[in-house]
Length: 166
Length: 442
Image (tube, rainbow over the protein chains, first blue to last red):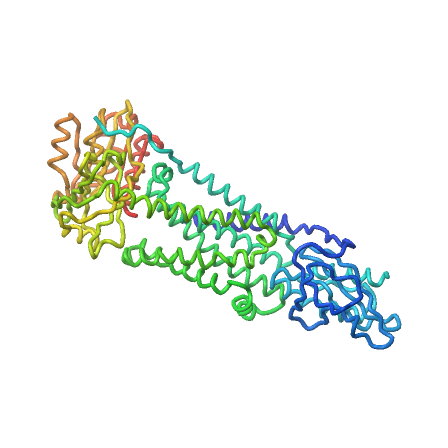
């Protein structure tokens, strides 16, 4: 019995110690570099002139209720597409594209998102719609991160800001 | 003169093995640390904990199989009974890790994806690669764990327990692929995948080598056969086994082999039985108490039956020493000590605990050996009530064996008796490192 208690408490104590050391989150490097690292999926970009989405080069669209892939070819009159820079997060780069009409943000599309695991995709499917609707409401880069998706949010906001700065 | 092999194989002691297992665990944790991207929020904590426990479980099953791989340095250093105890203890721990891993991952992923636990479980099972297989594996391991605990309490037949344990190999195989397919630790870390696979392959090779190839090779070399069966006492029989070139086995008195008798009813499992006489050059003797279906069937063995033998195993092998030696046997635990008693040089005392006069095996042989070498045998016979108190008390031991605290003690008997005897010896002043014991229930 003493061994059981020792094993259980030892394991839990070890886990808590490890995880709390690890929870000192490393700052998300929001590098201005496009692409490269990890296995992020870039969404399909049909004959877009935009320079972006150079990472990976796969053309899978992940499930999720939000625009994925460049909308540059589907613009209506008066709309312009602005690509943000790819922002590296710990889980892979995030890159977004703004569609503006008369300097008003009317759409946001996700060009590149972390999709190493199904878990990444689940989180993206949950977080991006919220981030996009926040962006459309705020019309600026000053939006809140989505809880439970802090890395994705940070990458999104960084890429959004770089598009707004253009 | 005692038979003593010239070059004893390497031994790994309990401390060394424990240190190695813990060091391996730390490497596994370092692997997680290296691969983890940081822990954030409740989902991060739950998922992180789930990942660590999963990795430890993946490492743990390998350790558990390695403990049972019959690796000679382990068998010599710790002894099979201690390895089996470690395996049982570790098995419970690893099964708990597996269960906690599954629950934490489901919960953590559900929190991260903002879904319910039930729908997240369904997503994990149906959409994450290989998770379904791993789930089957998890339930297999859990079932085996539960049955083993019941087997330890003698509520499940040995045969059931044995067959079920074969499914652990299936479970390990089923659970392997999800570790790479879903584990963030191994994602994009080719070196980690390589070394992790190498660990699994190494243990697989050890098991195949020491549990399959070595016994086959040994059979080809030694051609073991049943020579005859002799009744020793009610329910106790000796089996004589002949073979060629037995001196090459380097077997020592006190050791045992795992025997597989090739008859229709016995071939499927091997059982450990000690040598009850010093190994000869062309004949070995084992003595078996009638404990179950298997031992009963042994009484009907016919001469000429082929036998596969794995061994020798066992760490109950006294080294020559200037100190006196006490041999303490309980019940059929006399078998290895009988072999030691006949061969060990120096001053030897044998204490033989049996529950009734009828249960004493080898009385004539023991008395003859004692007379020939001028050693003493004490028979402690009868239940506690008949004797009047515990016969294995420190006081009784000291009075039977003058200078006990200066001696080495070797104990073999049922688990309960062995534990009681070791406590009594400690209380009588024998240092821990001079008490050697093996209980035969494994």
